[in-house]
Image (cartoon, rainbow over all chains, first blue to last red; front, side):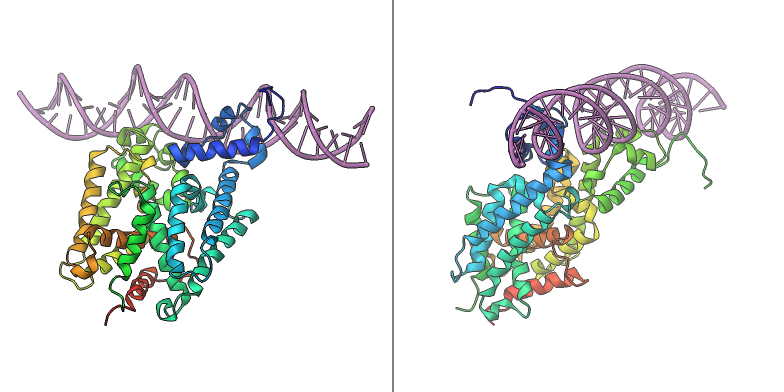
Length: 193
Length: 193
DNA sequence: GGAGCAATCTAGTCGACGTCAAGTTCCTGT
DNA sequence: ACAGGAACTTGACGTCGACTAGATTGCTCC
């Protein structure tokens, strides 16, 4: 289509979302400004509010998309895979590092509309995917309560991804997912043979 | 002392820092406003800037204080303690949960003046304290490179603390440090006897 | 004990922001 | 074709961070 200036943008919602992801990835969530996003889309300063209500609404949309993408990424580990939970940790880290802008928003409830139904649904989706990785753990490893195993795996992956994303691990090699895999293997290296 | 209104506040810097911690703990970093802090201290709107230069300067001071407190907390684990690294993880979690406002700022370089010498010094202090926990690990557990063991421990503690602080673990019992300890023990439960 | 001086705080201003209300243009369904 | 709603514009209000110039204070040093 030609660059005709019409009154309607066409797909402003998607354009704003994309621009938001770019800005967050390069300058952080704090740099997000609805007016700036409107300028980038060549639209009046109040146009974004029509699609997202307010700043928190925009970030809520990003977070929702993030949880959906995360759930999908975790689901790519087929059931019955050996070391399934371990592999899901790797997917978790890969997701965080390949979608830094989503990840930066997903776990900051202060910035979001916590009561948004789509957000909570997407969260639930990701939560189910994560816990499914615990089910086929050997009972000896699962501990008294299956939750603790999931919690440990989640903490390890989440901590590693977070530290990596905020620049706390500058000296690392260029394949963080592989580093994470080695990390988990180390944890197991002294296990019963 | 009586509530005499003097021109000089007395200890404005400390008053602003305290108020900042309160606001962050209750409403998050995004709710911090220099003008609001000035109002709370009953001082003109530009007064805080003299002590902290700008918003990032204020948060940098908080982060610096946080790293110093963290280093001190980690140092309370005496050298030669059995399971020393494990115990330092517990201290890490305890620090994060008892100083949520500091912790919320410490790992957000986008909000800070990364080149601040006091900040980098405090960071280095905490980093040294953390790595000292790896030194007396049994060689079999330390892995090929001592760094990986430190990284795994750091990731686990950081991830657990982060998830707990952002409300991702609502169903937990009321002693998260003990939960974390149990978590780490689970990790080892299947080890060689 | 007082002059000078730096630290501290006030007051005013600027541009940018989020949000709201009201208006305008376009599209869709009937 | 036309009503009605969705998409966007325009204008305005209050708040914010940052900057500047100037007022006030209290410490230091002679």
